[in-house]
Image (cartoon, rainbow, N blue to C red; front, side, top):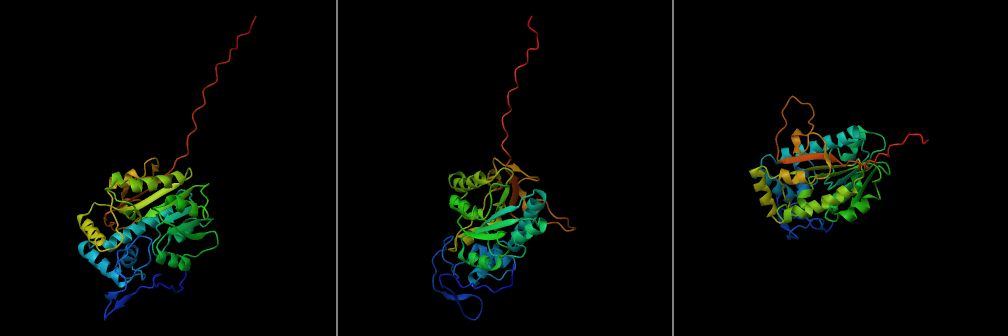
Length: 317
């Protein structure tokens, strides 16, 4: 990543008008946010709130206000964000160094953070690691063009929506080869896909099925997402979803586990993120309402050939 300044003015020209402090006094537009729609500084955004919790600088007053209100109901919000980020680092390191993966598709990239996926992967396996970042947030894409830089053919980014996996995968194939084992990463992204309570979570299951079908044999799917296992976080999410922002939905651990159907889970399976291959530490990892896993698509086994008939070795007289 470079240290070049980035123009973060919203694409639609809107801005928060401050009066004295950080809080916006007036905003040009106050309509509800739409995933992938024009950037609004007046409506809180899930990605920018996470950037705030992680100590980043890419957020607006509305995001900070919403993040503070969220933490008022769920004080572990920043710990949740950090724990999920640490999970991402560990899973990418495992895939690159332990599983031999050299192609990564990171869907729902979010704002650039310290230790982005391509840097983690390249440290673990310096030879020919290629990473493609996919997002449809205009501000995220502006940062990606400026900051997610690397040698040609090594790091790229595409403007794509996970709700349309066919188009997303077609764009990804212009950057990555899916003829060799690749990994698809969904880190705190699926909450924007469908409603877990609607039609047996069919929207998310259909999207994940398309991604699994695209994986070559030996390829991996890795997921990390918020779960509905903490009442305080559920209350904070409910408040956030009623504030006009693009909603984010938590799933049960069972729903996340089912998304891996047809793949072989790596040890320790689908578990709370702090229990997934933790790094050695004298301090206990905090428990957070997020679960994750990585799973591999096994090579298709060819049916066994029937044994040849026994040879009649009797001599004819």
